[in-house]
Image (cartoon, rainbow, N blue to C red; front, top):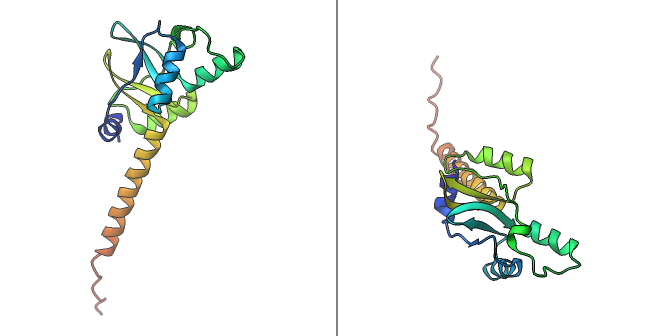
Amino acid sequence: MKVSDILRVKGNVLFTVKPDASLWSAVQTMAEEDIGSVVVMDHGDLVGMLTFREVIETLKSNGGQVGTRLVRNVMDDAPLTVTPATDVMEVRRLMLERHARYLPVMDGRSLIGVISFYDVARAVLEEQSFENRMLKAYIRDWPEQEPAQS
């Protein structure tokens, strides 16, 4: 299974913010849309990723306030990315090694989606369930063996 398969099922609705947006407006978007991340874009280029991790760290270091901080001051400015052709097993490995819960999917310089740890887990579970059903159907239809001849 490839990242493109996950995006095909998930869809590729994107939520982006500009680096000079207020952190508060980005947090409002994340809360309203029930999402854990937004992609930071500047003039059509991916320049960062803002996830709930950066928001929580900001709250911790700023006495529970986001204040007047800008997205650019708290975003991950070097997010890990994948391509549509990246294998899901590689995605799982990367996510675990880098503790990344959200990965932008890039086709060249174009952002085409974001996948989450949840999206990957759901896709793997669905693939395994499908394979399980196919194996069970195959076993049910197993041809009977002919009796041994003497």
